[in-house]
Image 1 (cartoon, rainbow, N blue to C red):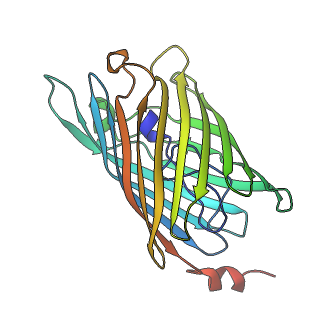
Image 2 (cartoon, one colour):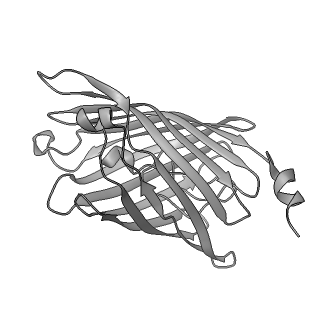
Length: 256
């Protein structure tokens, strides 16, 4: 499940969560703006390797504090002695709402409810998607300091036909140059009565290639040995595409 809890990142506010990290933050793209993240994410374990090729993450700003999101990965999965499996995994539609913002003291708080919709029947049969729908209810808190931004996320998956699951993430970021931001995190993903029980750490960065294009990179692993079933490597390489004011005239035309 670790590779599936990878959601939208901010583009209009200074913050560190979101792609290439697993931890999310309260940032949103801004009214009428699109943020598109296209990436490749490997998660390598002792007995199984999974590659999201690609991971598609679409985000649209509806007002200054609301973000509409849809994410879905195409998965390639390999296991020793087993036939390679490929297919589309579970989709993640959601809505982020930043309901508190204190610019004077650097605080932001949001919630980001999302559904993990049941995957295609073939992917469920091959073990690269879940067959049940779940509901994720998280909360994200960011505190901005002069030299560093800190972010915390906690969430719980409410499951109807599968095991409940909770996530915890702590991230930090620093803007070293106008083009380069370095980020890192510790992330815990634990299912109740089943796998995964993953605790990972990673580091990465964002580098602005030009107007509207940002390179995203990340690499990390679990704190445990590779025989524990936890990831001995996880990573992300992708491109963030920012489309400013695209569709904004339509939103403004319908506004009072």
